Image 1 (tube, rainbow, N blue to C red):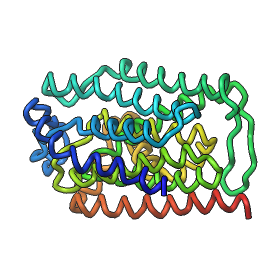
Image 2 (cartoon, rainbow, N blue to C red):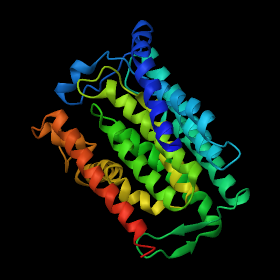
Image 3 (cartoon, rainbow, N blue to C red):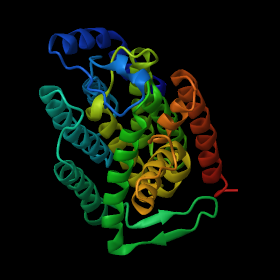
Amino acid sequence: MEYFVALCVPFLILMIFGRGLIKLLKILNFGQQVRNEGPKSHLNKEGIPTMGGVLIILAILVTSLIFVDLKTPVIWALITTTGMGLVGFFDDIIKVRTRRSLGLRAREKLAGQVLFGLLLALYVYYYSDIGSTLIIPVSGQVIDLGYVIIPFIIVVVIGTANAVNLTDGLDGLAAGVTLIVASAFAVITSGLGLQGLTCYSLIISGACLGFIWYNSHPAQVFMGDVGSLALGGAIASIAVLSRTELFLLIIGAVYVVETLSVIIQVIYFRLTGGKRVFKMTPIHHHFELSGLAESKVVARFWIISLIFAVLGIISFYLIGS
């Protein structure tokens, strides 16, 4: 029953206060800035309120204070979520004030992300019983990374946060995929007996579900970097604290593909002197420019995400079979 309530509370917070937040963002003139080189169909998104992720974070914080024992390692999931969201907040503030699609400088954003990734890594290695081991999907084997776990965790946090950020390019896409990923981790952490992380995973799911109400096509509000980086930090910290980072590669397959599409595009562009593999990246834009409607791309990515979430859960439970 507690799990169900933990899922519902953030959803209700988003539902109740979402419309008011949208009005406030409009009053503050916090509108979305659209890239000139983006799909022409996105030009009508210019000016739609952004930074809706602030309410996602508040819903997560309020619900966590009610349902989560903050004396447990879950507090570090909350710190990582909020910290990464703070980096995104400053990035968004610069964007809306300067009226351009670029916010913090790359090195400034990276420095903030490294800081919160490092804090989580130091806690895990030096101040917790979590240790430096990783669980291998399907086989169940455990490998000990020793000191390497510290840079490994930093990479996981930064990589996941930016992957969710890249996925946040279509109405409802990032929120829907993260809803599925967080729900899958709720199942896995429950299997590990980590009740606090299970509860936190469901809180993330509930917040995403509530945000989709306003962010589904046509979107009334966007989460902004404050939302996408916070959600990425949340997912990464859940994986780190449950030692299931490698399962994230399966469960978060959509994140992985979105990120790889950008990496492949950049490398190929530089090697060939300007040629491209995809029409545009992240890859969801490639499918848009290939003629698929935005809502259809989102729906198909949700389906793909669900399939890989199930595969990730199966790979976890095969360990005990």
